[in-house]
Amino acid sequence: MRVAIIQSSYIPWKGYFDIIHDVDQFIFLDDVQFTTRDWRTRNRIKTAQGVHWLSIPAGCDRNRKIHEVTVADREWQRKHWQTIAHAYARAPYFSAYRNFFEQSYLDGATMSLSEFNQALTQRISRELLGITTVFHDSRSFAAPGHKLDKILELLKQIGATSYVTGPSAADYLEPERFRELGIKLILKDYSGYPQYPQLHPPFEHAVSILDMFFNVGQQTPDYIWGWRQAAQLQATR
Image 1 (cartoon, rainbow, N blue to C red):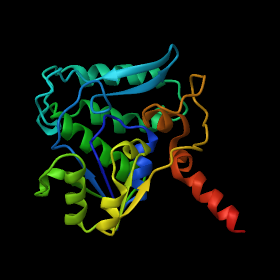
Image 2: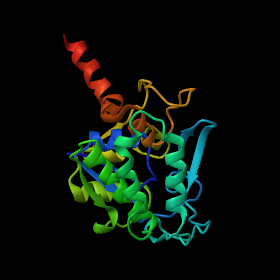
Image 3: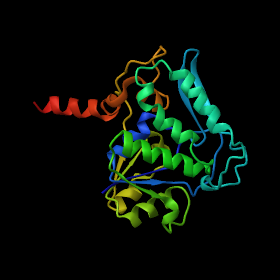
């Protein structure tokens, strides 16, 4: 069984969903320390003026776990949606996805950071990308320890045979510890993603997946993992 364990992120980029698609079980690692100015609270979109950061005003207090972070500013969701709508109003598929994302931002009261990120990531995965991966929250496991110890404990408890993670994790992972547990370690390769028609050139890969939906619509999976599957099929012929 292939498993990924990653902190929840705000409107993640395509690589995050590529990993979700790769695995059978995905665990949001949100009972760990909150860090500021990273993907938990911000991401990038393309505008006519260039790349633009959208940042959730979650404060600078690092003495919190991710799931403990709440947002006092009740207006951030409306402001972010207005910025997104303005940036992509002329994109080919904006109207097709407008209701989905507008409702995600504006319906209901503001949730905690973790709840908002997890809920939107799961909805995008299931309703827009057709991903069948099973989601979990790390808080539902009794997994003590910190950093790598916690990761390994979660993998043992869920019965993982393979662990898929981003390439930056190579800096702290200890491959021999995975081998001792009989768990295959897989570092995701983000290279090779094809460019797609992007409303505001020059092309930029490192933006929220919202950019793909508004620009290529239902072809979004083709640009995340479909191109790789097609290349593998061609190679076997």
